[in-house]
Length: 384
Image (cartoon, rainbow, N blue to C red; front, side, top):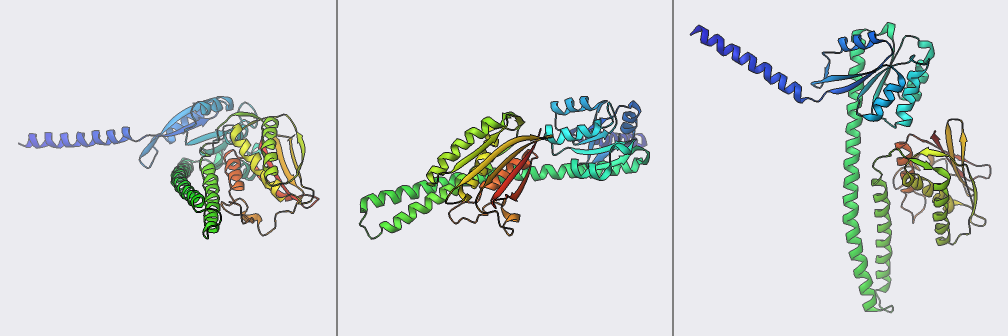
């Protein structure tokens, strides 16, 4: 009898262990890339973090022994949560080069980067963390087991939160597309019936003016829906080679047509350098067209002139669009990239929001200033 109870206890214990193992197998691990040219560092890291878990998910380690090897790994699979990155490897700044390429070339803004260095002189802490979006920075001599686990916890929490934000953004974008589709169907119906009523009643009808207003407002609503759809359709800023001068020339032609629609004889001052950049041609077109359209509208009424240039400046391709009208008011500057913000009553106010969405997605920077003539100057710095 005593023996039966013991067996039952043993059976329950092993059953529990199997359940724990089953749950562990089901929990997808966090992928961690160790980048260091010293094999002992890889071994020590795996030993210290071997039993580490965050939100009941273990770590899955991959090793790279040079900066170039780490980039090839991340090109093949970008879904790493954290990279533990040595600074000095094949060169004195190999780790910093990897960090730059992760953010600018691979355009991976999610992966968290923890720098570890045995020679801190090659990586000034403030500069590295602020300019390269580094999650943490440690000298190897100072890095204890507790500090490493704390740093890993912070990095994984940040990675998790960034993914939640991205999922929410994608959900909102999908909802915006659905709402836009529903509104477009209704506006087409309203506009169709308004047109039908106008034809039946004739131009001399007492309600013709009201029907005209209905048609005008539905057309305006359609423009809003079109702009929101365009914004929501920007899903991923994928890597692709684009020749900036070719894309700019086509964009200029589109904006010449826009200027004609406005009844404006705009002079385009064009200075474009041939340069291949990392951007989808359609998204680059959106950026240039929106900036040019904005410049065309705000250019001087008597002698409208718009300047567009693209030149290589160090490690950047500088795209500059300027007009000879009035500069952006100081009070408007904080809001010009906000959705639906506009100083034009008839405008939708989504153009510069689209520019901001794309430039942020590609990690480009946009600067707004005033020219010597007093007009607005939009400068986009595109990393090469």
